[in-house]
Image (tube, rainbow, N blue to C red; front, top):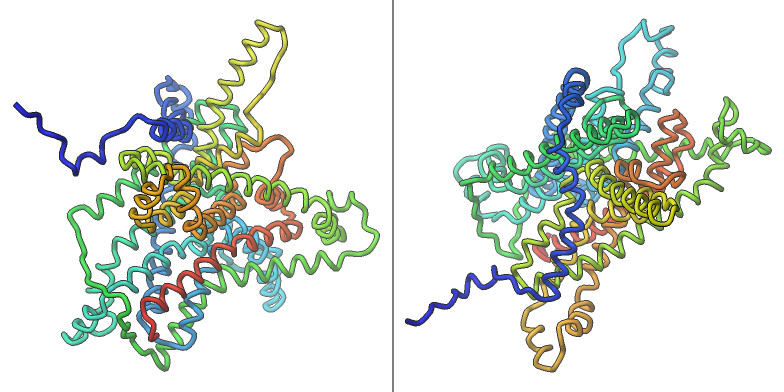
Length: 582
């Protein structure tokens, strides 16, 4: 009896235990170790700690986290979908310019907006000061003004910087929809609003949900905004329990709860698309028939597109530039002590000292970490993507390796410190018993641990760019290289890498910028007395020294503009290719 061979369609799921597969599994295990460490702490008996948390802060953490998710979800969906619809399928003055301008808030972290808007809207800020001067009010008892340091303030800050996630994916979905469907809806008597609600929105729904998922994951990861606004969430709770109370197990238990939020969000996104399929027949090069907006409709569209750009980017940057201008007007001869302890006359002088001296130290730290992490992330991404190309069954391992992007930075930090602390303690105990010498901390609280945390968190960003560029290379080139005697490594070096150059640069930039802006993981894992620009901004803002935080905050925003410029260029290039007559 002849044995049946495995069908061809199932061969891609068979593992081949060679160097590529074993190395991929090893990398996946190392990158998954922080998540496994956090999950393993759930088997430890911590009933007393849980009882204390449940009686004190747990309900607050859950309520505020859910409130943030609901508020940011509604806000980002409203702004992202409406602006994407206007710039894609409507024609009004300035539409082409708004396509790129609406991406600008993506360059500014939410915690920087929180610092600038607090300086603008607080009691001693220019707006309330002007109101008291204008109407003769003497104190806050004479009038009501919304408190920016609140849950609603945090929702507003996060919405202003996260709506581009929804905008990008919704715009791409609207752009790829067949114009014949919209024209058919018009012929059936639908006005622009009805066409949007009944045709365009259902077709774009999967992309919108994907954008919302990204925005909500970033919301759960936020630390600087909610900490500055005194809104207790899981991220602030993890930080306070770990460093304030010294309770490692309690912090890991909170991290597990936060992980459940993230996994629940992913499951909800998958379930929302279950049994729902939207098919569209879009041909490249088709001419998009846009709705012409004139009169008050055009003014309304311009206002809708202008508001998030001004509130999410231009106004905060202008305020930071103003604070830097105050600093440059510092009196000559101010001592360094005034920079460290600014008085009424010394806060501006502190900026001048900080920008000329300490600023470059923090910038050097940030650039070193970002460049090192980005380079290592791209190398690992190349290996995993090429391993997946050679062994399709390795796709499962690469998906696990890139899972860290969906996990908040605070959870990753806790998951890294737990096994590293156990490793350091084991080595120290062995060294004491064998040689009578204490080794101290070998990995915990080092730059290596911090870079590892960044890799777990942001490898997916670089891998996505590398994988997409590698997938565009036809397999026939691999076969041609092998027929000429090239091995797998030489084919990668001589054929693939030159063709992947643009994707590698894109991935490098994206990882670089994400590392520059990362705050929660940096605060928890960083070495002692090793501050980055993000940590420096957080520390200065926490001490109410907002003027001194202007320079590092602007530097972070300036670096954040790199992927925005890259995305804008790709959008313009893609739009001109798909619709050359626009």
